[in-house]
Image (cartoon, rainbow, N blue to C red; front, side, top):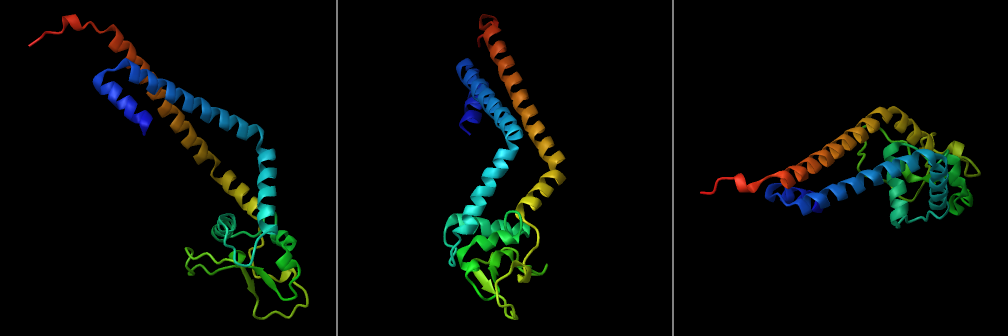
Length: 200
């Protein structure tokens, strides 16, 4: 907003200093975006591993109340994406509560829901199966989504890669156009001979 304000005031009042600041800020943002994109592309595997470690840490330390913001965020992801765990639902067996449970207990946010159910309501904590006959808590008995969230995320990125690339290219073109117009306006203001303008 500040950058847009500088560019607008500089263009309206023909202030070269403000247009120059607008150009520099826009150039820095464009360089930062390209740098982040390149780093993301070449470090995708490392980023996936770090993300996996973070998710596994959330799963291992997930409490019954699920009161922390990280736990609530992960519950929301699992409920909306319709996935369970990072690689598979068996990741949840590392949680001490589920590991030590003798009943069929599973994370509520993983539970399979009907299409007509309210998707805005995200369940938290752990649920117990009503018709449980198993003597141990096995992920195969859980009424949850069978896919892991990593697989779902990769599938979503592959499906929408063209759209994401198009949006990024569109933003880059608009930024380059802003750079070009600001530099042209700077040159125009610099070369204008105001002594020829009639005075009334």
